[in-house]
Length: 153
Ligand code: SF4
Ligand code: SF4
Image (cartoon, rainbow, N blue to C red):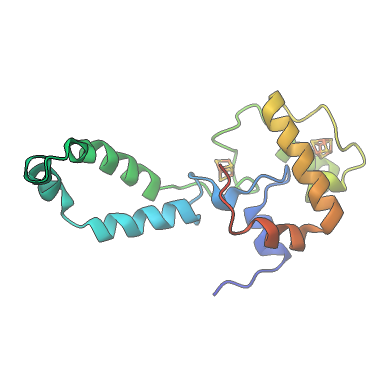
């Protein structure tokens, strides 16, 4: 079992507050892990999916190849998290570089928070502000406890 300390949390919660650990692209994330496990559990289901279309009269099984392709995609996630590499999702994000310049681990620790420098769209900016306010209110460890089992989406 991995030790949950400040460094562990920093590996999962980005400077903006978003939870990389729950991102579909995160290599060590729940989505990638469970997709790999589901892939293993399904084994050679391709053959059966085809048969079940007629045997069970369930056309939904014809969609299995697309589902499998998507599951494969989720199971080979490679992102090491925001602090280690550029985010693949939010290409206009300024936060990581800015937080390094300001020498803060999280934006709520910055004297400019909430700033207009994030590069986020309106939706993400609202989440950024709400998350950082919550982290500010209860502290990063408690915040992590609060969100560690919640989906990000
Ligand atoms: S850096 Fe971006 S792509 Fe990578 S895990 Fe975090 S949110 Fe996902
Ligand atoms: S200026 Fe804004 S983006 Fe940069 S560290 Fe401070 S709060 Fe975060």
